[in-house]
Each structure stands twice: as C-alpha cells, then as structure tokens.
Length: 186
Image 1 (spheres, rainbow, N blue to C red):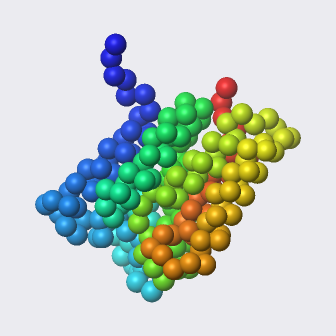
Image 2 (image 1 turned 90 degrees about the vertical axis):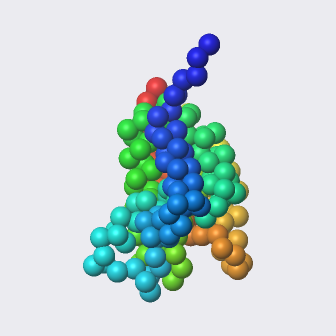
C-alpha cells in the first residue's frame, strides 16, 4: 500500500500555508503581515503592487497554528471531494476567485485587515452542498447549510471579535454561485 497525493490543489494549498506559517514563526517574522494580509480600506493603497498581491495571498497566511488547523480541518475534509467532483484546475480557479472577491471587498469596505482561508472554507462548505444537484432543483442540503452556516455568521457579525464574518459570508456566496453555475462533472 502506498500514500497517494490524491488532491494536488488542496494538498499544495495546505503545504504552502504551513510553510508560510513556519517561516513567519521562525526566520521571517514579518512575512505574513507583509505578504499574506490584506490591509483594510484605510491602509490599502491601489498604488502598491504588494497590496494587490495580498488580495490573492491572504488565504495562505494564518495568525497561528490554531487558526491554520481550524481552517484546514475543513479544507482537507471537503476539498478532496470537491477536487474530484470539479477537477483540480477548476477548484484552484474557485479558490483564486474567492480569494480575490473576499480580499478586494475587504480592502474596499472594511477598516480591518483580512488574514486566513476561512472564506475558502465557507466557499467549499456551500459548494459541497451542490455536488449532487440536478438542473432545475435547489438541494435542501444547500438551503439548510445556507441557514445554519451563513445565518450564524450574520448573527456573529454583530459581536466584537477578531473573526471576519464578512469573509465567511462572501466566501459562502462565492461557493453558492459556483454550485449554481458550475455543475460538478460526473
């Protein structure tokens, strides 16, 4: 029996995220803040290439091991199923689009910085509820996940914490759109 690199997009994403965290915590302490955090609207500068790069790379950076493990427990559970259903390249594209949308909206609308892959987690959670959907139908699992996950995030957005419920909601919205407009291959 051999170990297989079964979900290249998801596994590579996890590996790169872990490497960035290790580098940040050891030899490059400012790495995550400089290259993997989207500044909020008061700090974001459209003239800085680095800020545009972070629009995409913020999903790789994480504040600490608990943050990374919390996100990748879901990504490593759901991601390989989605990668098999949609293909590695399509899932990579969905992650990039979700990163771009969550990062750009955060930079334009919110005063706080954005860091982590939780928008990707919510994209995957909502997208997963579509894996067995047929045209002309709305899966009940999608409706329930929408109510449970995004409803909780809307409720939590009124509390004071260090979590970007906005990124969760936007990521879930991206996953919903991908599910509706990009059916899984069968």
